[in-house]
Image (cartoon, rainbow, N blue to C red; front, side, top):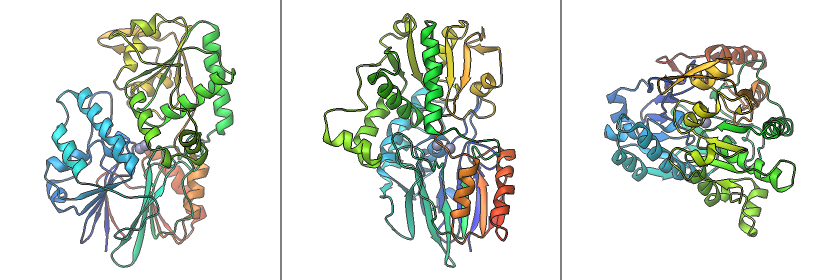
Length: 435
Ligand SMILES: [Zn+2]
Ligand SMILES: [Zn+2]
């Protein structure tokens, strides 16, 4: 018998963490929830941490991995299972997270090292101790996990998934049999319908060219990993083929470091990109158009007449993007281009919802720049999530997580129609459900 304890990401996006309570307890992910003022963590207690046998990490985003080192600070003896790219990515990402938090984190670098020491690399589709990881299509190395549980049951946890092929990655695998399914619902509402890659790329390029035509700068907030690399790859291709005006593309805050990890893990990218990297000198992750800011106050970037700037953090919670925003926001020729999901309570969400001023470093900054949202998402939309649920063979229990409550509930209603006999749950944080 297994009880799933929902420690986070239930009715919210952030702090993903699910404990499978059984003879050998397994923890799926252990992230932080980033908000404007305060971070929130999974509701784990010390006794659970001591008893853990295995931890599985789905991918290297902070809302899935940001709290993991804390478990090693609390002396867990569990092994942390993940893919090789995920291990490489968390190494740089967690170091950066500690640096940005400057001593305010619940753990230190030595705890990160302890985590890395206890990491076990697993390849996709390799069965080990009743556990298999499958490609999730979300970011480099992102995995879904299938587990054999006591009592001959199986459970599939999606982590974050994208069923569509992107410029760099193949889409998530579907049709994996499982008795129980824990699935994300970031874009689970019926109205969440993504444009095709072709259409969203066209929209993106149009917005950028329009801004450059009026001598403006385009600021794109991104996570360090994922959309940033996909976007750069696309921008570089468009500039190379003359479809977009050639201007400097500035990379600020980790995006560049992570590019190197993408290149070193070419085997985990889709075949045509792999082929380009491994068989020619033409490296799609290197470009004469990519520039790194050379001054601490970014005056070199800000003095450019036209530029595209990719900067972290993706939801404008912190990081260099805020410095650019402060300078660019009061001028109507500039554009803030939002490409990723903006959680409730973040500055990014406030801007998308129409805020006309923001307080940054105790200054009230008027927002006169254009704010545009083009979904260039690493997550599946409503129809694709539903398709995934429909194709999960033999599923009896579906748990919808990693989405705002209303979105998760809309997906649940639709899921009930495709699986009439299955139990569909939208759990809350702290809830425990037996399967
Ligand atoms: Zn993610
Ligand atoms: Zn996530």
